[in-house]
Image (cartoon, rainbow, N blue to C red):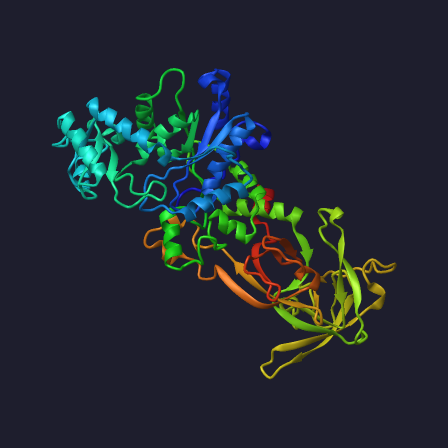
Amino acid sequence: MEEKITEISNENTGGLNFVEQEIVNDLAAGKNGGRLNTRFPPEPNGYLHIGHAKAIIMDFGAAEKFGGTCNLRFDDTNPQKEDTEYVDSIMRDIKWLGYDWENRLYYASDYFPKLYDFAIRLIKEGKAYVDEQTSEQIAQQKGTPTEPGTNSPYRDRPIEENLDLFERMNKGEFEEGSMVLRAKIDMANSNMHFRDPIIYRIIKTPHWRTGDTWKVYPMYDFAHGQSDFFEGVTHSICTLEFVPHRPLYEYFVNELADDSYCPRQIEFNRLNLTYTVMSKRKLLQLVKEGLVNGWDDPRMPTLCGLRRRGYTPEAIKDFVNRIGYTKYEALNHIELLEHSVREDLNKRATRVSAVVNPVKLILTNYPEGKTEMVEIENNPENPSEGKHEMPFTRELWIEREDFMENPPKKFFRLSPDKEVRLKGAYIIKCTGVKKNDKGEIEEIYAEYDPETRSGLPGSDRKVKGTLHWVSVPTAVDIEVRDYDRLFSVENPGAEEGDFRDLLNPDSLVVREGVKLEPWGAHNLKPGDHFQFTRLGYYTVDPDSTKEKPVFNKTIGLKDTWAKEMKKS
């Protein structure tokens, strides 16, 4: 199994990561006239995931930190896979993370005329040719990393013939796959990307921005660097898989650039996370096959999925800063991400009482029909948020797991003849139970001590257990969607076989009839964060209505990462 590494960057100690240091060095040297212009260049063929967030935080964050600008550019060079749905979602996710491209929104399709003219120029200079071989034949002729490739039989076509064929390709005279335009570089180069790479192919699918104007479209490696150049980008920051592409990036850009300005590519490691996959293809497969409930399913690593689950931009940024930017790949612990989420929600989530698996508790000596209001802190981490009142009555809901008839020695919750405190209220003592015909407990009976109400003089008598509760007459029934990790193995991407067989069958459990205190059910808005006392952090789902509130379980209270850090 791949070694798990969690990198801690110098960011946490106030230093610069290596990408930022390179930027600082370039600015100090006066490169590009002292300008800093980064860009985030997504392909609009899917939704952004947390791995993209790492790139966004670098691209936009570095520009903010050093007084530069950051462009948003859609590399829309493949109309067969692109959709405006993806464009809209990408812009929404970037803004959710807290970044703004202002008036710097661009598309690779803006540069199609310039790229086409550049390709024509390469043909005229004898640096590109039209190849009629199949993709399989071209792949065979590429050779291997240790063996040189062989020249295409079309490599030495006359320039005029190449020009004629390329122009006819763009007029739609030839079928898709019948011809490509290749750069004529070096079939023996040790870097296989230099072995006459394809720079244009025929696609007859109308483009969502340019319609039927074009029948030939540039390949990513040909469009990307030139788009950076046309925009004035100074630092093209990308992930490590583009290291072998960098010489080709520079080769094409140098055909256009001069000494006064040239974009520079810098690579950092991707964000890999345990118990999930980051492959766009696999994520699309999960959505298309209905294995998840859309791109914004809270089990997905997509930013819209994480947002719906209740993760915050602040937590994601904290996690990215913790793992840092390096030049080697790593598999990061999902527990560290959860730690960042938990720390953030602890500061912002309102505390309310909810009972997930309810059983009725009846206080036999409490007056029937009486209701008292007890005060509960909205957030102990932020006293300025104040308190709210919660009704206390004779009949209450408590968690079924908080009672045992025959408890083990260190069970500090409710059991026969044992005392516990009801949070914010009284100490009670269990006096008996009522069971149904199946032997299941239907009701628990107890007596309360009226001298022990929390906050009153003389109420400081100590007991070992404290239980949360909800008043039966005022409880609101809600739906809770209890989410767990999407995959049941730590590194699904490294396992053999079908990755779909590794899905966690218990990644979603829907719980109906969960009891919530009435204050927590008032004026709910999608995205509101709550801590259900003793249970975990929950977020209001967009499906929630006044008649049927719906909450997603964002994360539990148990912080395994913090415990591991204490051990080490």
